[in-house]
Length: 256
Image (cartoon, rainbow, N blue to C red; front, side, top):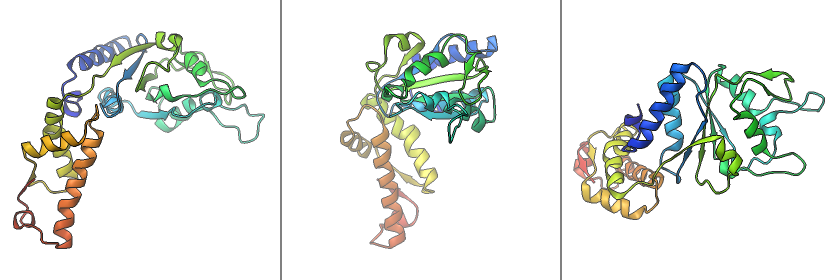
């Protein structure tokens, strides 16, 4: 499943497989929480989704970008108006399971507040080795999170405190090389897009891929996929609008 969604990254995949094997064998949370660290567009979120699918668990994403309120994770006590549980309990409800995979996305972009507390301190409590005693303010009693798998993502390790990093098993995803990007376009992005846009007989040539990569110097492949989508949209627009579409496109055979 990891090979079908990600090119190369053999060391990362091996580490993920060892982590998953220990989780399954021990029947509970194993070791520290996995932190996928790397530049945008290298596939951190999709790796977490693939892990959840491979283990047969629902995947619930919690975006922590811009969160500066500890109550966002901890919940609000029932004595206050509009009281509600925190996002951890909410994730269990939406996942309809006590053993989902919860993706803590972009933990490096969390903030802090003097009035409302620091969400990083709540994370330290949630990601503790003994996760059977987490108390949500709304529920008011200990909640067993020992069967929940937490996976976190970050673009950079610098904003994270040493204490939080110590609770995490850091897996660094390297940026893609030009050779990697070529294989990703040919083997992953383009096949997915031509199936999505139903233009299966349209091919993209090697020199076109090289020019697209030159236009997208980013470390990941997000911009590369975006520009490939524009090509697919342009092909369909030419055919649908009848603006001098080439005969080979109109017949479903084209090379870009």
